[in-house]
Image (cartoon, rainbow, N blue to C red; front, side):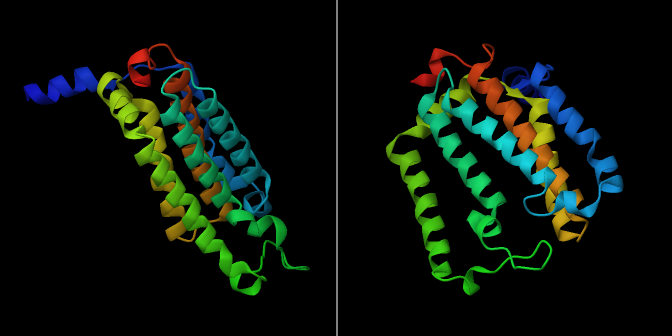
Length: 209
């Protein structure tokens, strides 16, 4: 029991920080959005996905201009770019719509040289892994884990977004429901990156070693 108390005291932060308002709003609007928004809001390249991409752009900028632990945040930036690429199906839903059909796109098998997509994605992911290893990003990540408490509410919203998005996808719920759940994940990620990158309580010179 004492070990549990020590872990909570030394590693968990139950404080509310300004950025938490965005995950809270995102969580609150999930039901009304799913209930009342027209289906096309949840389509590929639709309103919700465009908002998601804007949030991911902010995530990338926060990571890029982090005040400390720069290698770690550059790695996070690379992961954010991968998430953004996934949102547009690595360009497939931007460049290869099926004419005359709604929210329909050619598969990679139907696209000339589409077979290159998976190998190129694999190369990018491999590059991220190599940067993590040979750039010794794990050192800065460990320093952050060791020296900085976890903002509990921000991470709670983050994991809730992941779970709800997976549930919406597996359960065959509407596109809008799935997309707003994903938006909760992205907004929560943005709030966490901002905290660790810029909030003085969450970054220190120790994390840049």
